[in-house]
Image (cartoon, rainbow, N blue to C red):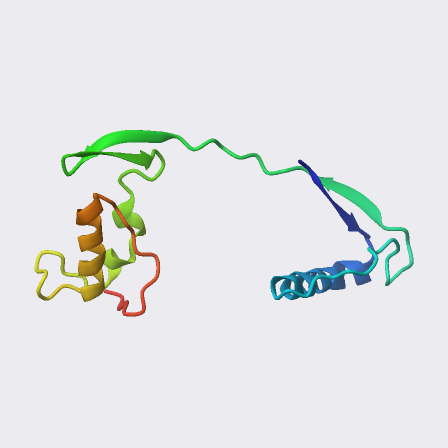
Length: 133
C-alpha cells in the first residue's frame, strides 16, 4: 500500500522539515507519540502543503535452496549461499585461528560449537574483541 507525505518547495521546508520529522520519530521511539494536528500549511511560507504519494518499494521474493552441509540437509537463501566468509567478521580478525581450537578466539569457538550442534552457519557481524588483521 502506498503512503502519502506532505511537502512544500520553499527553502524553509526543505531546510527544516527533515529535522522536525527526525525529532518526531525519535520521540515516538521513546513512547512520546505526537497527538497534535497534521500540518495543512507550510509553517515557513504559509502555502497549502502538497501531498505526494510514495509507492511501496518492490520486494523481490527471496529464493531458497536445499543442499547437504556436513552430511545434513539444510536450507539457505540462494543469494547468501557460500557467502559466510565474505560476511563473517571472524575471517578478518587477528584472533581467529580455526585450525587450532586451543589458541582460537573463545567467541569463535563458541559460535562454531553452536554451529556444529545444530548444523548451522552463523556469520558474526559484530564483536567486542575484534582486532583487524
